[in-house]
Image 1 (cartoon, rainbow, N blue to C red):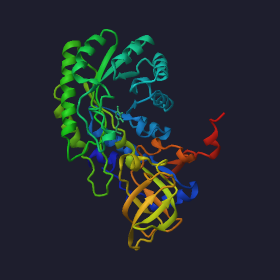
Image 2: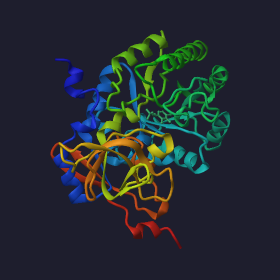
Image 3: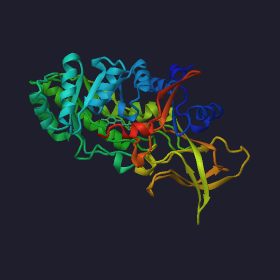
Image 4: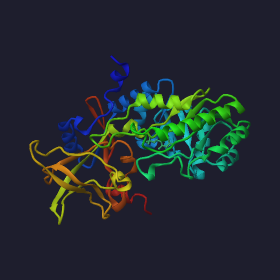
Length: 416
Ligand SMILES: *Cc1c(COP(=O)(O)O)cnc(C)c1O
């Protein structure tokens, strides 16, 4: 038996692989909208990544799901923490990551973020800071930082399922790659220069690895150039963006093939390869449960109104993202009908899907929305004064309330 398979489970967990009865019971007990995250599946995803990238550092991009239950699971599974803000650095430390497993990647960092991260660095000098602008280095100098530094390059290669998630060629991210070797030479004298970094965006897919290969090839060239000038680097980080099959008939990513393409494109370098998946770790470990509150016949559609909306799960409104939806209460043999599923927010973008077959929707039915573990709860908001949902974490047969539901009192708590 393949060891990776034993630890890692199947390459994808589809919505219909969840235990429907258990989900319906959870919806009854904790009410909806409710996020459910299965920590065993998080651990499996981590194990598959570690097995495919056996000699690489695998860092979890915390922003995909920053809940403590997930962070602890990821830490126990041996991944490091890639943090995009001071808040995420705090969360990583609370979850018990040691300093040498925390990387902070500054994107136009507010002063308060740098203050806090440098303060944490004094307690945990093994922490790594990745800079994506020359003046971030000046700002770190001002704060007395001379520790482990990594440089984020803008490789001028973008990738992504939507322009809003493509970062590799967006001027906002990183330092133009052609300038990085000179800066590295200078900064190697002032800091402990440990690595170079790039992240192209989200959407590495099995069908087209060409953008990923090109990014990795450029990063390999950069690492060789820097190493020839300043000596060995610890790592060359080629980012995250490992795609997951949101559509039911989409094949899962072949991680071994991605790992092989990555190795090949990188070429010979002294540095260790590092990757930073976020979505891949948590997407299929989460579902969103929601209840139908209205079914109405509109002019040219049957509109199914639910108690979750774009404030609960933003991806459809923001990226036109597809999420599988199934009716857990619908009769098995009922003919599916064509529906639009819409939330309770006063925005026309507040639609989870249009023209989707759904088995006989009735008021009170519980729907499950698949692949909701990544960028789900994290992107939730209280727009329209909608309290954020609750989240439960599953581990074996145990269920734990991981985040309680926000209340109307919470909503006004900041007002003076
Ligand atoms: C968001 C992000 C990632 C993870 O992206 P996924 O698509 O979730 O894998 C990795 N690295 C950086 C720097 C990021 O900002």
